[in-house]
Image 1 (tube, one colour):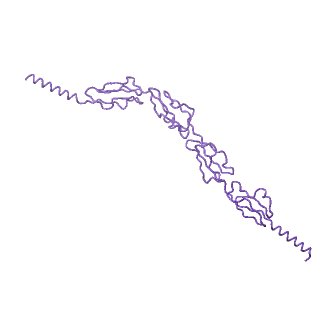
Image 2 (cartoon, one colour):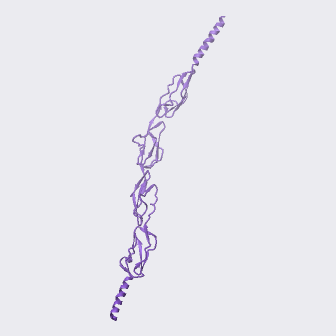
Image 3 (cartoon, one colour):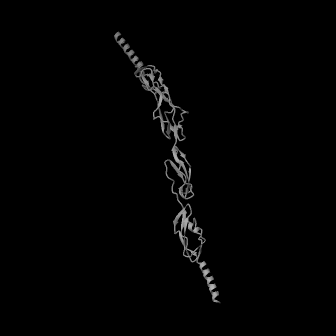
Length: 290
């Protein structure tokens, strides 16, 4: 073989050897890609290194992101990428958060409010690379509009244009008037007062009771006519009678005496006394005649 041929073969052999020392583009691992400066290259020289980055939504869990070309072979990829964990949604007052799956990249959280509160905003947020996407909603308290005024009465609690959930409006009546219907209204979860004023509206009615009619009874003390709301009177029975019921009566909201008109019932002492007196008289007469 000529020297020129040997040189030619040597040249070919050197070229083949040099090509064998290069590494092809590495495939990488699950949920990762080559970093930007290495993406456009197809081959890499012996001894060169490349690095991987986790895909969007994934973070490095363990291992090295760098591998090295060694005589045409890449060192093992030890980097492990796991889904980003957004953690729990920010805790806000009166908010309820449910997680159908988990709190990892791509998962969703469903948001609602406690009873008595309205959700303002989106009821769903999603875990993205930057965290939970979108502006979190707010839970606003439900409000009831101002209630109607009542004649001959007033609202005991401070007058307001609107009342918040579970706030109570208390009514009272002027003197000599009684409240008919519910004395209080509560702001409910549907934004209306309970019980609804339309079904049982509170009203103040004038109260006046008639004079008690008690046979064989006598007025003892207390109010005099006209008998107004909460007026009280006390009665007693005439001699020889005893009372069945209460001596003390109060004029109630129905313009009736409470607890009810008593009765004066004969005690029986009148008949016995009369018999004894008659016997005594007869005895005296007999003695006188004797």
